[in-house]
Length: 352
Length: 270
Image (spheres, rainbow over the protein chains, first blue to last red):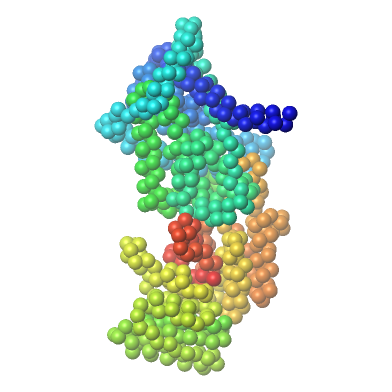
């Protein structure tokens, strides 16, 4: 009996991962199939017609689903169906990264709404938004330039594309009848729902990694070097495919649910680059080289900006972020202004 | 306390020698003065060393003058390794920008290689009346506080114990009360930081000095420097975090960062 339980436990996580992958592929197929039906809604009603609109759209969508990855996957699906242009897909992915930070801020807000007068609960969310915002702001013109000049055009991942062709052939009998029966927008929404579910399955499939303080003597000191922390953020997020999970892995280092800001700033910078790995897989599975180019451009821009900051201007950057964080968390009015800004900007972008 | 003072005849080391004599008169049981001078400054360096020795001998402190030739940094390290000192007091011009990047910092080189505590004299070398003792809670804190307490008692200086909390809460289980509390509240509450600060204050008391604790929040290096500026401290005391070899590339070195950026004397306790 015990042996059987052990066997079931061994198969559970690979089973979840495989189910997540199949669901992810199905969701991409549905989004790609249904994206065409979204064109009137996006262009006529929401007026998502330029790069600023799509950035605001991606930002607000990420707020809505409380995650960036499904929105980024939706962006490449919309590009693949030619609903969005190159530049629009790029800015929508940038918006999705900014919107994804809201979930960390919301956890802090809920804590305060439950009657705890602790503004420090908000600091991790604010920090996350400030870091992502500053990187995206700098990466945006660089990305638009790279895409505009076509420097990274024609990229593809043949191995994944071959796999995608096989899977799509297998899924066609399922997607075909659904596409005939459901309107395009419903197919797309179902795809977004399934992709969100697939990320949950991936999260549950991941091994419970914890860096325990007692087991890794030098680790707590090691992570004080920004370069080391940056690489750790990059690598661990690549393995876990989620910024929140990869940050969670580090928390036991402090044993009290804390993390020093010296450590977390370069870590999030690294994590912000590799968190797009799932979007890159989505782009490759869609079999569209344009989608791969957009995601790679995003990764390259975020990596260049982050590396320049880490290597050349880390201390002033760290200080500026820390000062901005202190100013926002100092008074209710400042925080209200910050909150206003992060909700007003995406709306203004859509209205542009 | 056996102290090593150093001079190369320059105005930079003159300031260090002057402060060193003032410290040694109150805190030293014996003093060695090291003279490392190039030919054009040899006479000046000799005069400075002899004047310092005379001052100290007047105060009843035994003094020996050692002469070496070569690079100041290397000779200080060799002298400190050859004899046993409790404190080495150095000064000298600090390199900046690209020159520091290419050639390194002489003060840092000394603190890395000397097996004793090092007082690096920078900025205005006033009488050391107010110490800012940085306590990280790590393994070096106890030694740092003991040494600072001993020196403060000898000099009649007051001591402020600083602990910087740069933590951010990342989970629901994080104890937010502790992240917003004052040093007194943390000590009263018995939080890990409070217990540490309480223990360090007790250690200070056993060294014959009472002090009080201050908590700041933010980036550790910036907060230490900000506190030293705002509090007009005469001396920053910090434990040697310096790690030799390959580990030095991986492990952050806070004492080096403070040493290079502070605009007042810094004591690195080993």
